[in-house]
Length: 254
Image (cartoon, rainbow, N blue to C red; front, side, top):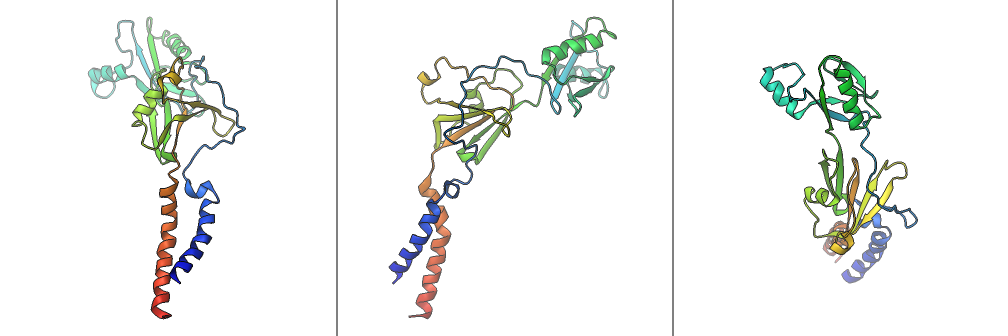
């Protein structure tokens, strides 16, 4: 009797479990159908362009390295130390930043080089031969692993962060990661982003490639399905319920 009851329940449950991958892999992300175009990867040929809500650090010095910004809180020593790292300013919603002495200026749409030249021109009205360095501090790359259940946000202050470096900073591949199927998503993910696939399982596959990342790239490392463990997880509550019902049946109806 018990065997028949278990059999009936399994016949009901198993089709439900296998009817959709969403049940077995509910955390899987960034799926694409077989007709979605896969782009041919080319290293970026464009400099980063500032946009609203970026954060930038600005250093303004003489050609000898002396800070032109006033000492402020903490005195000249603290100001010197801060200027070595750069004073950080947000690019506001209208594309402007508010910096010492010259006030609010528009930088949205400018490259870093153009912004440096623009600020040098503005500060030259107050100082002799000002030297300006600008760096974006909130550029990032996001890495997803284990069907999206593990995520790491990596800051990329430099222009030459590679795919391998990003994966290493995220902790490396796991024992269920597919090194031969790494998806790189670039562009606006809500408006036809570009999709690239990378195989880093062998050196031959990486030979001659240039895996330089851009700001806001998304790396999705696909993983093995782990169907057995997932099925066991899904049916465990039903088995518990079944065992309980069988025990109640045996207690009251025998």
